Image (tube, rainbow, N blue to C red):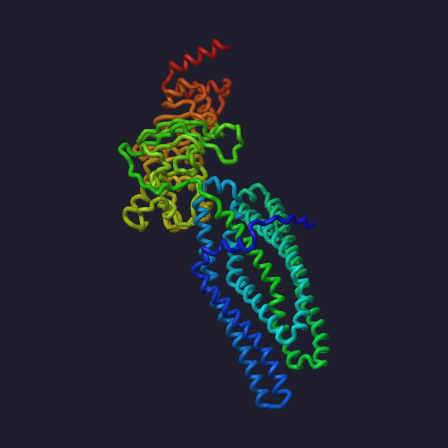
Length: 637
């Protein structure tokens, strides 16, 4: 059953919306204007044919002059040929500017989407963005190359044709116009109805695109859980909704087509009866009557096309509104453009009373990052631990300005990161995420992705960096791929295992040669033996690089010089692993929860969080602290 369509009120107006494409079309406007002129000339040749026929009927046909009849027939043929030629020239003329504007719009959308902050992508469906960058831009191109040109030329043709009708018989022309007035009424109602339908339909196809993308990216999950039929049902519901909207659009357009087809015919029938009466009274010659209806026949095409051209115009307007919904989004991550050279003591990273909250956070709730202060010294590795939801991943996103702090500041070598150009900042800080994302490119291109300075990825320097990064990340499996490091890996690297993707992502961060390395639990998918080898090699890199490492395993914590405990968006304690084990019950609780996955309960006694904590403390060489804790527990019992 078709759902009722709610037609939104659209602001700004049609022409103001369409005018927003002008900055992208400015260079091509002269050629588009030439296309309109050529289209008008083509219509002029078409309108000249009835004038020629008038001369033929009232002249040679009356006198029987065969030579003039053949000459006039040849002129009509020539006019028809010229009309066809100019139609061809119009199409050739407008084709190139339309495609150029199309390319400019696509590039502008892509560039703007790349520039927008992560918070924007958190709230927008990727399918909606794809729909705007593909379908809506194509609509705008078709309107510029065809719809706009033909709408302008057809309107001018109709005006000129009606003016010519008045030269033959003002009475007949007046009746023709009056009989056609209802088209204005239905045209206005069509505009209001179709504009809303066009927007809702385009939004719906964006949702369909999202369904397709989610299903393709999640195909392994759908198959492993046997939920393909459910995904199909959701897709079918959205696609069916889109179908219903398209049917309603078609019905609305068909209704307009009915009136645009029937009303002119009714006008011609009225004019025919009146014209015969005028001709019988001698107020209109046979040639003029014949030419009048020939001209009306020429105008039938432009009049009939108005409905389609209006529909294309409203769809293009809706498409531009959707495009500029994205283009109007402002980037809150402002680039200073300043390249500030690193200071002495390269790699110092300091959080000074840093706060962060998302823009849609309800007033009165605490900040997600609630005033943390942390000083990571040059060359130091700082592990960040905390329970799930404490804000660890958000902290790692702040140094590279994936999000901007909402309070306080972050200093890199004593300089506020907001005063450093984004390009420079993101060259000096590299990240490896737990959810490793790779590109559909070669292993070489993926690993050297962050080396903007290596113009030739196959140069000796690039080869050396590539080899070192692969070795540190224990990613030697790439040499066994069909084409080694030149093997093209699938979209998002899904042709590789999770551990292989993580190792390549880690190699990419290492190859960037940053001053600061931010690692968000990049070893979570590795087995114990591989993790141990990666950690051993990683120690050499971390010895000369400042690092902030989110740890979800005790073994990862052991890589760090110091550890920071994050609790509810605040730093609860900072110190070495051994110090925090001895002094912070919260830290011991967190570490014991991290160790739970590696612990198996012993059969001869109950294993509690407390006993796990004590075993960890004893294993750290703090037997005296363990004895004190046991004594306190016994007293408490």
